[in-house]
Image (cartoon, rainbow, N blue to C red; front, side, top):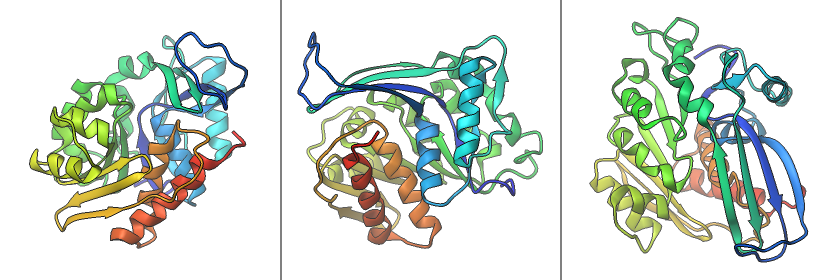
Length: 296
């Protein structure tokens, strides 16, 4: 691992444009609320949560050489992230995400992450050219992988010797992209973070609980999985069996980034030496505080 970073975050770094309202919404509704633009994307959300936990993440992503990309990089550096491994593109625009959140949850969202998909393997060059590792000396640190990467790239990562020694932590970008993680399920160093719905999509069945989802993924060959289920009990299944934990009950004021926050908080807890239910409860507590915040 590079001396300037504790963990690598590979994937989408973009601008989130989020509209929030305290009212319930359905298709066609027009209601008052607040609109904000914030740094986002799965890799960025994880990185921001890691910074809040005292870690220094490095971003491996693509940004356009436009005003939005430069502004985004400055924001990341100001927060304490390493950006020297970012791939810059003259031809690709900086990605963005737009969502509407209401009292009844996420109403709709559109992810414009085409630049990340088009950049492909180029964002991984620092892992091969000696800056962060090479074929002879692959990176041995923690790497957070984002399901916004294309299915073909994720498949190649599953067999890529550059990732053979890494502690891989993997999350889907959305339920619609959950199946992209299938090639990585059986990676010997992978930990998969999904919710109950995403677990069902990967396994092609409906699970009544997070525990059932975790056990289903283990049956598919997953080494270690953590399955959340909103305010219901979550489950972790791994080589030492299955454990569950219940999230604190809080008022939900935002949902975008909650799964990424949980993943980052769990990684940070284990980096501090916590394990098992201690790590799960620490991560759930941090996530509960995040989703109950009203200031952003």
